[in-house]
Amino acid sequence: MNFIVLDLEWNQRLKGQDKITEPVRLRGEIIQIGAVKLDESCSVTDTFKIMISPVYYKVMHSTVSEITKITTKDLQNGLSFPEAFEQFKTWCGDDFAFVVWGTDDLDMLCDNMQLHNIDTSQMPATYNLQLAFDNQVSKEHRQISLARAMEMLGEPALRFHDALNDALNTAHICTHLDMKKGLAECEIKRKVKKMKARKKPKEKKKILPQKPEKLYPSKKSALKDRELTRFFCPDCGEEIACSGFVEQSSRRFMAVGKTESGKEFFVKFNFTKWGEREFSVSRTVNEMNEEKKSVYLKRKKRNAKYGSRYYYRNQKTL
View (cartoon, rainbow, N blue to C red):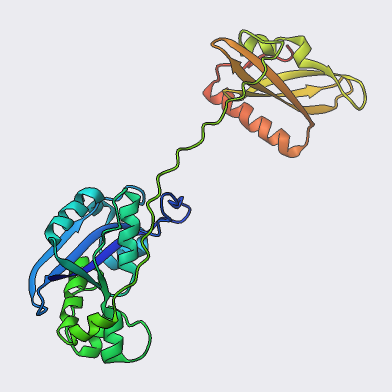
């Protein structure tokens, strides 16, 4: 039987990016697999390294990139996880067990396998060398980092946070341990997670809005409708007439509403398209203040400078 010393590097989601929760809660997406094959005497017989192009966390997290020296551009040259895993599986052979430093790599591997609908029920026995090192060398009853372990052994280490380098460093630690005793004490007892099928999003029934009674063939015709642009103040009862129409967006116009006594209002007309050539309009009216006046004048000045399809430069009242 061979021992496969396994190490993984994975990317994390960026701040604000949606976290994948189905079929697993994805803490990280694997971007690199590194492994060393040992015979029963713990001699290195082969090595493996492969880069993976992630599907979900495609942009390298700055912290991960800093410690791994892997860039977003590097990820573009990787294989898909299923392709990379198939090559890794073939390289491992039939009779082997995993050796890892800590339990995170095994958990991450299983999560990524489930993410891509790869069965995890036939995973081989996996041994936590970190625990064996603590039992035989450090005896501190706590988790020791790989870098600290190499330092305690007085061994020169390859650059950390490269998957193959870390696998080689871990393999080197094996030569300092009673592996037969260590393997008997540090097998990871893992609960097999049931595969979850991706949930299909529920189809939402579209509730079609009721077609309004009054429709216009164009926005221009709507803004010429006296019924829409002339109305009465709810407070004083005076008639309000709109003028100075300004296009705020393709669906919204602004105007100044004014009574005969000179009281001003900020009026907005919101258009909704129905079919190919018809529009409905909703109107909102607020008392004019300095802020609204400033918004109106800025947009009017911009439209006058750059032009607007529905801007009536010389029109006072429709």
